[in-house]
Length: 265
Image 1 (cartoon, rainbow, N blue to C red):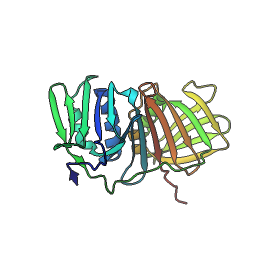
Image 2: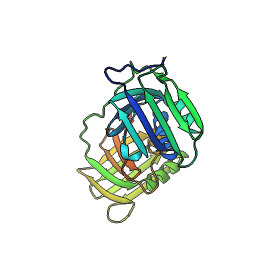
Image 3: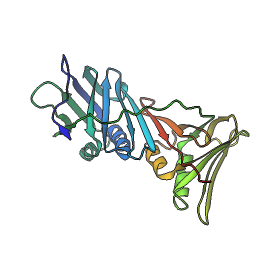
Image 4: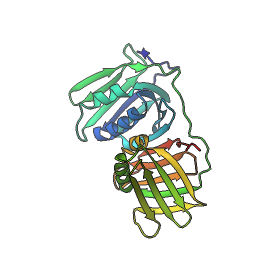
């Protein structure tokens, strides 16, 4: 349901921001890959959002510090519900690092979001936030943690594509991090050893850990990561996996959670 206004109390909620097209495209692309719509929370520190996909396999949290924007002026703490697919289509008008202006005010006759790209002004209606989920990352005791260059994980995912649609993440106490995928006839392994392979920046575990995860969702949540980004990966046996990484010199932080696939006995 589209809603031309957002409820506010007291002073008007206002937003005036400019951000590089490449940055906002990456963020909105990640959001739309998980859910077609959702809420963004705005405050003096920046923008936060948390989404879960319709099948409840993947959860994505993004924290955008105000320093990631070229300009960020805000009045009030508030949430706006947006159609990410629509916003992503609008942002295709922008190229490179040109600035994208985003403006909003809850006070006045027109409470739609205004998006400015060069000489184009595009007004976009907001959605009704009622009923939209507020997902929270659960408290988990995960006994394995690896810090791995994104380029290694991305290459392994490309290798898995032609074999199967899921893969194992395995860690052992001897400092070995392994991605293993096995199809009907073929097999893929990525094996990294702490102190031997520089792609494995750090690794620790209290024992052998092994869980199975979806290739499709892993590729979606890691798509924004640059090749030289260090991924912080936490997981446990038959437990969810958490990926953390940063863009824009730490000004944009991603936290992603995937539920495991449980093997049938």
